[in-house]
Image (cartoon, rainbow, N blue to C red; front, side):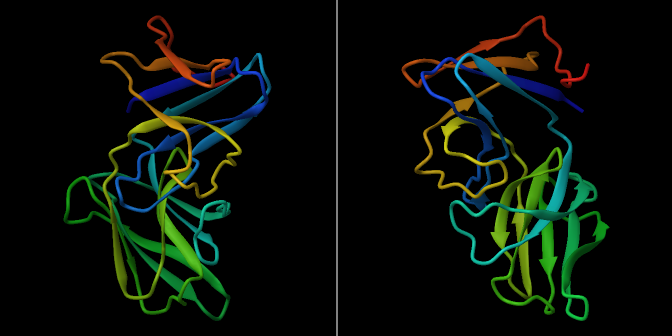
Length: 210
């Protein structure tokens, strides 16, 4: 378990959403993982455990940038254990469900197996971290979906809603990395709309109510 924290400061000239994204690595649609609206001179803080992985699904039509995912189920999972699950549709009750969580046969790979009960283009399925979606795909019947959880973090700002699908090529983002043995960072968005990142060497990642 590695607890991490990023404090985002808005020192730009306009109110905007400050967001943290994870790299899709061509595995799926990028989702605005964590995002909060901030006025100039204010800050937001995100804290998470980077081993807190999960499977998720959300009912949606065709996935496209701007679609906000209303996640209906979150199943705690892992990268090397509890890393495979089945996905089905209960037609009688008109709902989807993830079930049969188990150990998969591929290390560091999270697999979703969609069965033949699924309708076409009706739902998104994928993985998340800290209970929020990070990568999703349009689920289709009789398909296997594999994700490699290798989180790479990106700072972003703009008209971004948490859990919304984003156009990774259109979002002005900047990669941010935690140096060895550093678990807390502060990233400041300046008046020039560029980010400045510093390590909080003496800080411990902690939740807002600690």
